[in-house]
Amino acid sequence: MTRRIFRSILCVSAAVLLASLVITLGVLYGYINVQQKNELRDETMYLAPGVVERGAEYLLQLEDTGKRITLIDRDGTVLYDNEADSQEMENHLQREEVQEALASGEGMASRHSDSLSEPTMYYARLLDNGQILRLSGSEYRMMTVFANLLYPMCAVSLLMILLAAFFAMRASEKIVEPINRLDVEDVKEGDVYEEIAPLVQKIGHQKETITNQVLEAQRQQREFEDMKEQMRREFTANVSHELKTPLTSISGFAEIIKNGFVKPEDIPGFAGKIFEESQRLIVLVNDIIKISQLDEGGIPYDKEEIDIYEMAEEVLDRLEEPAKKRNINLQLLGEHVKIRGVRLILDEVIYNLCDNAVKYNRDNGSVIVRVRRDRRGIQLVVADTGIGISKEHQERVFERFYRVDKSHSKAIGGTGLGLSIVKHGAAFLGAAVNLDSRPDEGTVITLTWKAA
Ligand code: ADP
Image (cartoon, rainbow, N blue to C red; front, side, top):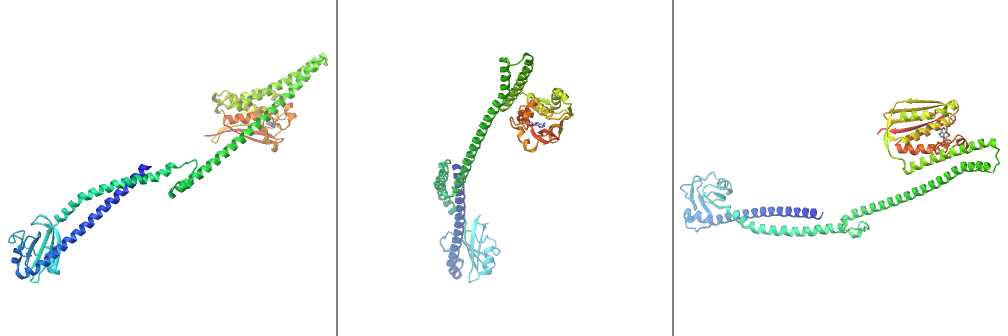
C-alpha cells in the first residue's frame, strides 16, 4: 500500500511539475515576444526622425544595432537594407507588415525570412514622408534564451522531483503507518486519523458482530450438548426400564420353577413364557444395538446401488407369514428404481415400516407398498388400512420408546424403537420422511429422495 500511495503522489507531483514548466515556458515565450516587439518599435521610433530628415544616408552612417534595418519606398521598392543588397531585393509592397503599415501606420509580422533564412519578427512604420521604415530581429534570439534556460530548468525540475519523491515517501508512510499500527483486536477510534475512522468503526462493529455470533454459537452448542446429554440419560433410563420388565418376568418364572412350586405338567408352559420374554429381550437388544449404531455411525459404510423395489419385495416375503395369520393382503406396486445407499440400513427402514403396517393393521386389512420415480424424485410409500395414529401422537411416534398404546404395542412385540430407526436410517440415506394417518382408517408413510 505504501508503494501505491508513493507512486500516486509522485505521479501527481511530476504531472503538476511538468504542467507548471510548460506554463512557465509559455508565459516566458509571451513575455520575450512582447519585449522583442517593444524593442523593435522603440528603435524604429528613435530612428524615424533621422530617416525623414536625411533619408537612407542617415541609416548608412549608423553603427550596427544588431537589428536589420530596411527602408522601403511607398511603391514597395527597397531603398536601403543594412544586411542585403537593396538593388537585388524584390519589391516589398506585398509584405504583410508593409501592407499593415500603409493601412494603419504600423505593422507587425513574424515569418521565415527569405533573405536571411531564419525565423524573423518584423516591425514596419509609415514615416511622415510616405516611406516605410522596417526593423526586424531574428527569433533565434528567443530560442537562445530558451536554450540557455533549459539547463537550469532541468536541474530545478530534477531537484523538485527528488524533493517530491522524498515528501511522497514521507506522506505515504504517514498515511499507512497508523493503519499498520492498528490493533484489530482492540480497535480505538482515537488511534487513527479522521479519514480512516469509518473503517475503524466498521472493524469495531464487525468484531462485535463476530463476538456475538461466537457467543451465540457457543450457547447453542452448550444447549445442544445439554439436550444430547438429557436424551442419553433418558435413553439409558428407558433401556434399563425396557430390559428390566422381561428380565423380571424371566427371573420370576425361573425362581418359581427352581423352588419347586410348579407342577411338572405346567413346566412347559412356564418355559414357554421364559422363551417368549427372552425372544422379546433379543428383539429389544437388537433394536437398541441398531439405533446406537445409527447414532454413533458404527454401521459399515459400504454404499452400493440398491433396487428399492427388489428390497421391498424381499421384506414383504419375510412378513408373509404374520400377514397370512391375520389375513392381511400384501401388495407391491410401482417400478424398479435404484438408489445409492447402505443395504443394511435401507432394509431396516423398509422392514420397520412394513412390519408396523402389518402389526397395527386390522384383520383382513391390506398393506400396499409403492415404489415410484418422477421429476421430483424417488418415493417409497407404505400404506396400510390399520388403526391409524391420532394427530397428537403423530409428532411423537418417531421418538425412542414412544408408543401410542404401550400395552397393545408390547402385546404385539413392539419395542418402541421401530420408527426411531426409520427416522435415523432415512436421514442417513438422504430421504425425507412424511407421515399421514387417520385413526381407524389407516397410515401412509412416505420416504422421498428429492431429485438433485
Ligand atoms: P413399536 O415397536 O412399538 O411398533 P415404533 O417406533 O415402530 O414402535 O412405533 C411407535 C408407535 O407408533 C407404535 O407403538 C404405534 O403406536 C405407532 N405406529 C407405528 N406405526 C404405525 C402404523 N402403521 N399404524 C398405526 N400406528 C403405528
